[in-house]
Image (cartoon, rainbow, N blue to C red; front, side, top):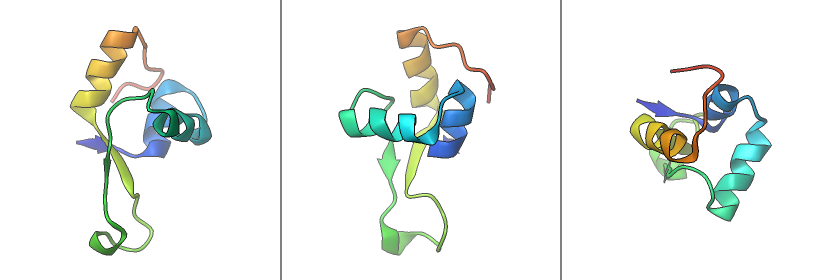
Length: 68
């Protein structure tokens, strides 16, 4: 299972812009990008694998507001 930027933001109780900022600064959980040509119109281009999110939360002591 993967989380979108919006889903991860809701999980942590922050704005999607905050998640994008962490991604830009490389301070957030690992993610994967989906090439524009390889995804349907309107689908997310960045996904966060749940196992990476869970490991990041444990390492950083983050308690999710909305568990998966």
